[in-house]
Structures are given as C-alpha cells and as structure tokens.
Length: 304
Image 1: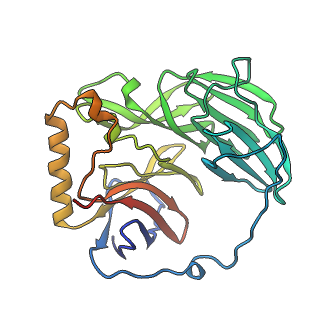
Image 2: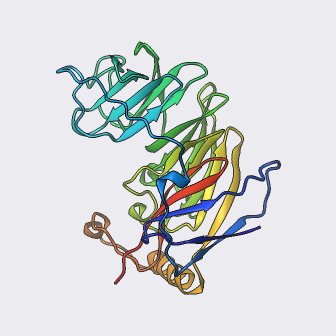
Image 3: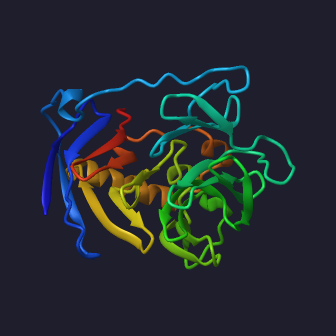
C-alpha cells in the first residue's frame, strides 16, 4: 500500500492513515513524501471544536513547564519534570485534585520524573524514576501502591494494556548482544519478563538514537513510536510491534541517511561530541501521533 503526502513547513506532516490492522503483518506499508508543493492545513480540517480549560492555580500547584499532558476520561494529568518537578491531577473543569507524590527519598517519593503513564482501566498512574531505577505505581487518589525495579534506563514509558509497559530505553545502560543493544522493551509489570522489540547498532552513539524529545505517544490500543535515523513509524500493543510504516523521503535523502549511518558506525566519536547537536541534511523523524483517520508526525531537517 502506498500513501502520498505533502511536506508542511519542513516540520510537520499530516497524512491519511492506513487502518488495515486486521492481522499482524510482516510487510511494511510505504509512505511517499512529496519534496515540493506545500499545503496550508487549517485546524478546522482536523477538529470540530476547541475547548479551553483553565487550570486552577494556587501556591501548592504552580506549574513551571508542561512536559507531559495526559488527558483521561474525566481528568487531566499534568507533568512538570523540570521546574516544579510535580505530577498534578485536575478534573475536567480544571479544578485541582491532588499531587501524585513529591520529590524525596522516602517510600513512594521520586528523585526524578523521567516519564509518566496511565492505566485508566485499573486506575493506576506510573512514574518512571530513573534517578533510582524504579517505576512507581499510584492510584488515582495519589496513594502510593508499589515500586517496580528495572535493570534498564527508561527514556519514555507508555502503558499498552494487559499489564504491559512499552519502555523506550537509553541504551547506554544496556548490555550489548551480537553487536546490538535494545532500545525498545515490552515489560510485563506482573512477572518482570522483558521482550526486546527493537535494537540498534551498538557502534552508533546514543544521542543519535534516543532523542531528547518524547518519542512515544499513547495510541488507541497501544503506543506509537518514531525516533531519529529510522525512517519507520512503529505501532506497539501488548503483543509487540503490531504494524510499521516506512517513510520514503525520496532517493536523495535516503542515500544521505544511509551514508550518515555508515559514517557513525565507522568513526569513533569523542565524548565531547556526544553532547553536541550533530546536524544532518536529511529528515529525522521525532514523534508521531496516530488516530483512526490520520497520522501527525513531526520531523526536523538541518539544512547545511
């Protein structure tokens, strides 16, 4: 199946989605991206109405930055993992309900907020705290339930159902196996079993694979994933990778990406360069949102 789309402002692409997910297929659907011909897309083409919710603000629940916003059935979960380091719960009208724990070293407290996920069916909130290597579990009242220790460094988490958590990993902390390092793990919260869904070449530096921006997003029945240097869009559920799409930018960009990847495998990158933003002259997928009707995916292109 082939899809066509137009490049919008070189940053945001919105395309029609393939919804044929009846079977867990091996083949990859291909999406062709036009290299010219911009189209201005109006918000009215995507949504019927917009509603503004003013969040109640007091001295106890000030928000510095919104690093995650998780809409629930009748609530909003707001995550500020940098300024105030809080996870806050509001009702549908914006009224403040409660904090979900706080910074500290006591049981139920976290050192860092790496990522937050929600299991609405069982009313559980998960906070990945890679300062301690734990995933903390709370109920919707903010009461501490459990602590789950993991032996890998989580960059992002999404609850995908059936007591399974999709974990996008900073693979610097993972052991190499046959020249590959895991970057996406399906973790069973009940048994602790780990299923490796995606791996990366260990010769490539982690800054090229695990991007600073959030890369996984909650989808209807699981999660979506896109990350730098990989032209694929992945859909994940409790059984693994359900479906993937290949984004074809055209022959010129594809060749540039292939040459760049080979260069990364061959060279020894000094530690100073790891913390610099290496610029490429081809598109890098960053994040993707998906629904039954369309995909919205974000890219970045550095033009030299």
